[in-house]
Length: 304
Image 1: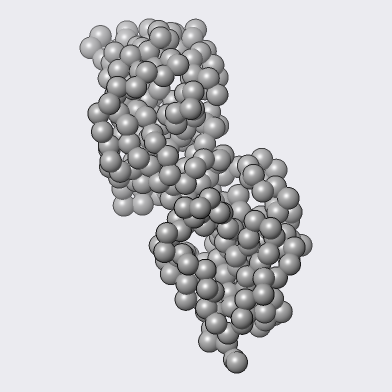
Image 2: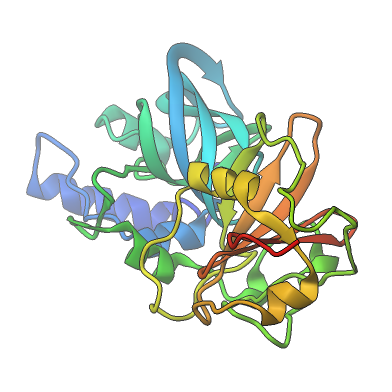
């Protein structure tokens, strides 16, 4: 997506009228209405929860804007679109070739970022990930709450509203996105082509030490509110390392679980591999390899 006058940032005439009206009300600053995260999500190519680290001051000239900040970001949870598990983020604009965007900058309304956790609305400026809105793209999450429509609201209910319909979900492995008729979440489990031949009654032998866990709601998400406490990303890795391999038959029919409450995402590895994971409340997990091979895992101590 190219930066500049577009629906992402609004038509110039609309922005100009807004600025004139705002300036008439306050000669000393630019007064803007509270942002609406739903509108920000519609405008963005990617919506993610990210953990920001290593923020540095460094001038970078983009196609339209010039940025003064550079930070490392790790995806904690993907909501919309495709993005690398870790990436460089650019922000805090100091100049722009677009007069409307320059007006934001002149009044100090820019996409500044600091170390922390943010709900981020992103697009690309050439090959760089930047905020899709001139000023409201990075909303910090504190105590499980984020600013929306002028108030701090709980993140989880807001994410429910930001989610895309299944038909719009973006997934590079589309051939594994068919809906399972026995679905247990809004998307259900991806199609399984075969079962991996790992020894049952033993822990899954995959080395997860350097794996990164990403939660992605285009894989699976709950369609009920029966289950309240889902594991965090680091807990997902622990569960995958400690659960036992079981047969598919045992996984499907040998355990009680909470219906319609699956969550899912990806495991990414330094060598470029990406595995799909599903967590099913009740002590069950599922891992699917890129070739469609599945590993069924259970928390219960299996019988030899």
